[in-house]
Image (tube, rainbow over all chains, first blue to last red; front, top):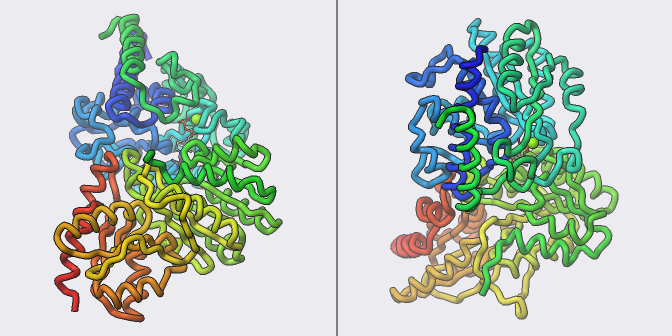
Length: 281
Length: 312
Ligand SMILES: Cc1ncc(C[n+]2csc(CCOP(=O)(O)OP(=O)(O)O)c2C)c(N)n1
Ligand SMILES: [Mg+2]
């Protein structure tokens, strides 16, 4: 990836982060922390790698994405809107009664959403199903998913991992949003699922560990996953929950809370400054 | 009077009755929302966070119950009743173990989280499990009593609790609660409204509106959904000849189902339901959703008028 392309991706990520903050602020509820931690992954996927068609969101040959940690809908919706699936102006209607933007991703309501999620542990199974169907139909689309590290406490995640390796789904790439936090605190205090990278290896996945807020590293990991044959890939993305908004960073209190007007303004000011440093607006 | 959510009262009651060293509380990474945090603060040694693993939590609860513990296991109702359903059936209900499921955030009043988190099916599912007892209290006072009754009963209990703060229906100082016995909170002779959970206070409002139209409505707080109070239902059918059920749940299999089963087998009587009409919920503010799905005093009034038209 050349310098210019990287710079553009960085700007896009900041743009998405601004929308996340604004959407959750206007909704008065929602999940900013985990949305900000996976923004860079979504940016690399939708703006560099994924083959999607905003004119025909249901295109049978498109790449698929499942947000298994569905509570981070603000990140997915913001990404889809910036990509052009629907107007960004809609984002401030998140969670409102007359809006199509449901609190958790809804397949039948939101253009570009490939699977309804929100109940943790189920999305990764659905992504296994999509990858399996791709193999069956001899299609060369790829399937991507993001799971949470707290989500890995669900037994179903491991059932899905077992199936993914068993069927040698090298068309499937999962990202672990490894931010170390869940609702009640640190994952290692609540119910430690560690060592996650070792466990994924033991489940016969190709495991790549990266800084999950580094767009260059994410890009490289996706390239490696595409070139890997006979195994699905798990990108262990070490991230910071709340990334990009300093007062939200690494604070589990920001898992599922909307910012006040003042907090929203401060967050947007910080993101505007980041954008300025990148030479964008 | 200050409003209180039944989940809030649940957390408080756990801490209040938690002095009993046999009581343990489990949660699945939602202790701040389910309010089991209140117990955690009082008795940290007897609180266990199982993580985001509801099915595991239910079977762990079962195992602890076999060792003599009174186990409260809490998560959102959608995950307690539906995700961990088969564990509840085979590991808790079948061996009839002493596990109390504190299921919070039931119904559409969850609000903005939307359909994925709003269960309107849980009572139907839990009601079909042998050995299960189901309570759905209508306010803080009743929730405290329901927690106490759950502790006193040896066996599985499903406590259906809500997110939303509600006005108090009952007074703490002269409150008599008996598991399995509905409470007549207003007498009336023209029609009976049988309600549960947050529909109880709305039914009282509806009764006031009906009074203004010259209709004398009886109101029953049906806090126990299973075993259902047959006597109070049959008596109401005989004396008022028309029934309206009101629940924040699907029309399929919950309070409406339970009351209908009693009526058709004992004293067939016209009935109209105020319930969710076999559909999923959606995101929105609770008050907006109540209007959209017809869970309002106005709709209770309307259904009362309708049912009185077909009354014999
Ligand atoms: C099956 C299920 N149980 C519980 C919840 C409630 N819940 C929503 S988010 C969350 C914590 C998720 O933590 P993690 O997977 O680490 O997500 P992140 O830190 O990326 O936000 C919980 C328990 C849920 N959505 N689904
Ligand atoms: Mg996490």
